[in-house]
Length: 88
Image 1 (cartoon, one colour):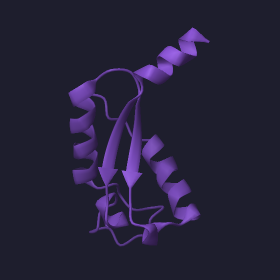
Image 2 (image 1 turned 30 degrees about the vertical axis):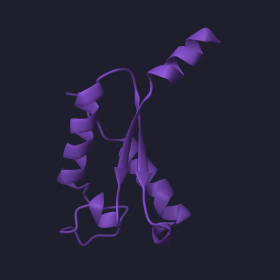
Image 3 (image 1 turned 60 degrees about the vertical axis):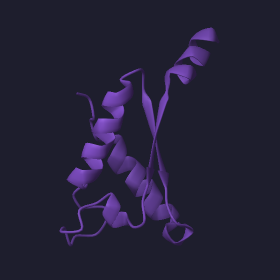
Image 4 (image 1 turned 90 degrees about the vertical axis):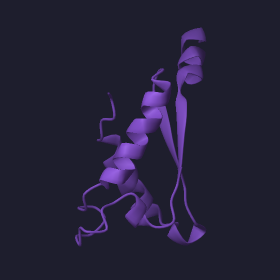
């Protein structure tokens, strides 16, 4: 139990605010969201924030307008971001 509590304590939160899905995915890529390339700017911002802490695991929290709320898109984005590596 103490080990699980310590792991939770070590999780760092990286909060990012977006206005559109183009903030996460390349707006130069015309493919559907599930196939679009992840934006280099978005990846670089996550790497920068990760390198600031470099302690334990991290949790990405995305703040978005309610107009972007779409369960299907959110699940796909979670899957896509889970596959990325941000380590130095």
